[in-house]
Amino acid sequence: MTAVVIGIGNDHRRDDGVGPVVAAVVAAQRPGVQVLCCAAEPTAILDAWEGATRAVIVDAAAPGDDAVPGRVRRCTLGDLAETRAVSSHDLNLAQTYRLGRVLGRAPAEVVVITVDAADGGHGVGLTPDVMAAVPQAVSAVLAVLDDLG
Amino acid sequence: MTDSRTIRVGTLTRVEGEGALHVELRNGVPERVELNIYEPPRFFEAFLRGRAHTEPPDITARICGICPVAYQTSAMNAIEDACGVTVDPQVVALRRLLYCGEWIHSHALHIYMLHAPDFLGEPDVIAVAKNHRAAVERGLALKKAGNRLMELVGGRSIHPVNVRLGGFYSVPTKADLKPMAEQLRAALDDALATVAWVAGFDFPDLTVDHELLALTGERYPIEDGRIVRSAGEPFDVAEFSDHFRETQVPHSTALHATLDGKRHLTGPLARYSLNYALLSPVARESATAAGLGEQCRNPFHSIIVRAVETVYAVDEALRIIDDYERPARPFVDVPARPGVGHGVSEAPRGLLYHRYEIGQDGLIKAAVIVPPTAQNQAAIEDDLTRVVVAGADLDDAELTSMCERAIRNHDPCISCATHFLTLTVERR
Image (cartoon, rainbow over all chains, first blue to last red; front, top):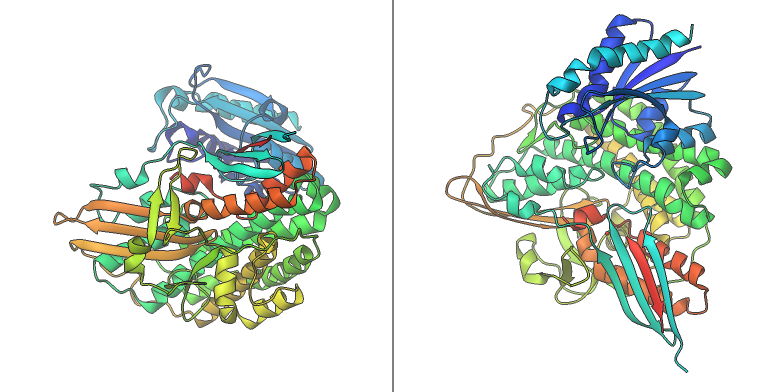
């Protein structure tokens, strides 16, 4: 079993950068695990998880009325199926996964760890609630990796 | 008895941004054909005022995630013009190389992920991949080569960060570009296979008589050039505002632009038809093999033209890398100078014009940005009228599909135009 951890986000949009931050901490703690950071761009993601049997994706959940900044949740791509691509000129994560499955270039399982964001505005640095949630998000990723045995 | 007919479609898919289409037919005659762009205006021209003259390349890049290099390049051309600065020829070559990456990425994306499903009767690229797996893999590899080229020269593929007024923050060595040449040689085979693939599609008949507008120059126009047109006299970039009028129409949040009061078309068809002789031999041969003549006035053939332009962009990138000599300095200083500057370049979707007025304080006093989709709205509405007339016998679903295809022929970027789609057809 091989796993890849993919942190998705833009570290110049405040809490949107939490995915890459969590991925970087996981990389430091599990040297043998392939950890990548990328934008949610289809060819980059198809390349990132190629050959892996399981992918753990870490991403920020958009700030909104239902968001609890710093809340860490584990979900599947099915939970995200209705999300829209950032650009209608591209595919969203769930569409990229479906394309990857058709092409034989996607892992059998994708686990998504999300951290609710407070601020997706311009600027670098995580807000305190999201920064404080990084260890919990890292633990959630490691728990998925440890399930692999 | 009056035959009225109304067809409504929700949000148009596989176009960039938010918009709608409304068509009303009475006795099979279209009475109203409107492209309704309802994406909110984005006010870029207004908030550029008061910014430093060095900022528009980075700010305007944010207008579009698909063609940021076009915005950066037209902005730099305009400001460098205002400031009377000429950049090193090798820096210009690097700008063209970066722009080739954007063309390859943008054209591959539109051909394979947005446009091909129309010709294969599929809803999206995921469905296409089920029956045309090798083709989709080829498209992804091409897109990736374009992205890689943008990363190499521009620092990253979306909104490149290595671009600055006067040149680049850092420039690659010849050795840095060598691995890219290997990837581009494979991409050239993929691009040629793309032309052959799309040339085999079935194409509806449609001939349009829009005036064509594009740049031209010593080479096939990409990063700069002179303005030429199919009917009228060519004019200087500085005279752009004398020939263009932007008007607000009630059904669109994007300004409509006309050329000397008439509709015109910019983009791949115009560029190809006005610059056929400037294509490289391998690109010209691929066009001939695909059955294209020296002119192309069927918008449904635009997918072939984009494929030929992809061949050109890959071939041209290889040429630039082969000829490349690292410039002594990555950039030249561009001190602010009060005045007005004009800049143009060929975005994947067509001619992109920028104009900046710099004040005595060195800050931007006024900005004008005319993107290709805003220019093409009237031409797209004319194409739609022709498609609706020709397709009067089609049932509502078929006619709606043809209308959507007629729009996607032009790869409209609504987000750029508002600086576009929901479809409504009414038959009475």
